[in-house]
Length: 54
Length: 362
Image (cartoon, rainbow over all chains, first blue to last red; front, top):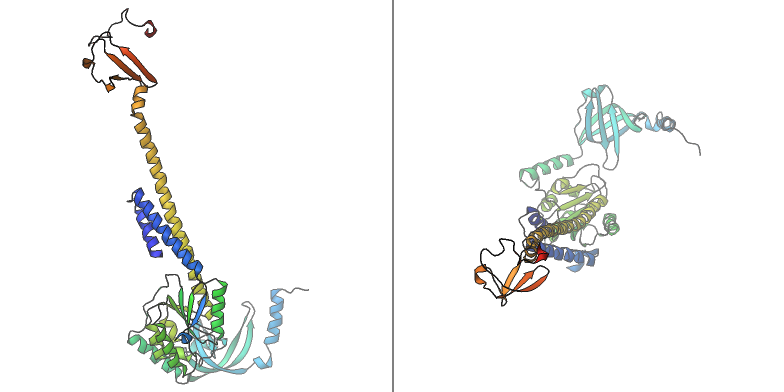
C-alpha cells in the first residue's frame, strides 16, 4: 500500500508527467488510500490462541 | 504541612542509613554486573538478578580488577552520597569467589558458538509496515500477555494477534518454546513478539539456550523482545531486531509503529493530492495565457482593429480584382454588416479625396 503511494509521489515529483497522467495517478492513489483506510477501520484487536485453532 | 528543603530531608535519610548497625560493616554476596574506574576509585554494581547494589572502593580500587559476571563477597557499609541523592556500598574488603556456577562459562561458550556459526549477529530486519498480523510468544497465563494486550487496547491497535503459548522458564520449557517458534513460521506475520516478565537469572536462563536462540535468529520477520525486568542481558537480545526492557515497552513500540504507519498513509495521500492540485493550477495558468494569446489573433479582434470582411453571394472576397462595378457586396464589421453596391473598382480607388466621398467621412 504505502510503497505504491510513495512511487506515485516520486513520479509526480519528477515533473515529467502531463496533466492527464497526473490525474490518473491521483485516482489510483485515492483508491489505494481509501481501500487501506476502509480495511483498517474494519479491523479490531483480535487475539487468536494458535493452540485452540490447531 | 511543613516543607523541608532537599538538604534537610537528605540529612534525615543519611542519619537513618549511615550508622545503622544493619547496614554498617556487613557482608554482601553478588555478581559483578559492570565496573568502571575513576582515578584510584573503583565503582561497580553487584546484582542477584533481581536487585542491584551500587558499590565503590575508594582509594585502593586501583589494585582491584573485576570481571563482569564474577561472584564476589564484599564487606562494607551503606552510605548516602548527599550531593547525588543516592546510596552506595562502601567496600572495605572484597573476596572473589569465582563464577556464577558454571553458567557464566556456558553463557560465554554459547555466545561464542553462535557467533562462530554465523547465527549471530542476525541481519537486522526493520518493522517498516503496519503491523496487522502480530505473533506473540509468551505464556497465556502471564502478566506479560495482559500487559501487551492492555497497551494494544489503549493505543487502538487494530491487529490480529496470534498467541503461541509456551512456558517461559524452566528446562522443560526449552522444547515448548522452540516448538512455538517453529509454529510461528507457518503464519504470515508482520512482526513477532517474545515477552515475559522479570525474574531471576535462573528464570531467564531459557533465553540463553543455544537451540532457542538459534531458532529465533532464523525467523524471517522482524522480532521484538520484551524480557523484563532483567538487569542482566540474555543472549536472545542479540538475536532480535528490537530489544525492549519490558513487555510493556515492547508492546508500546509496536503500537507506536502502528500509529506512525497510519499517519504516514494519511500524509502520503495528502502529498499526492497537493501535487496534483499544483499541477492543475499550473495547467490553468497556462491555459489562461494561451487563451489570451488566441484572443489577440481571433477573427473578432482583427475586425475590431478596423478590418472588414467582404462577401459576395456568401463567399468571402479576398482580392479587389474579383470585384466589378455594380457588384452587391456585404461588408462585415465587428459590430454589424453593411450592404453596398460597387460604383468603382481598381487600384486607384480611394487614393485621392473627391466630391464622391461621403461628407461624414471627412
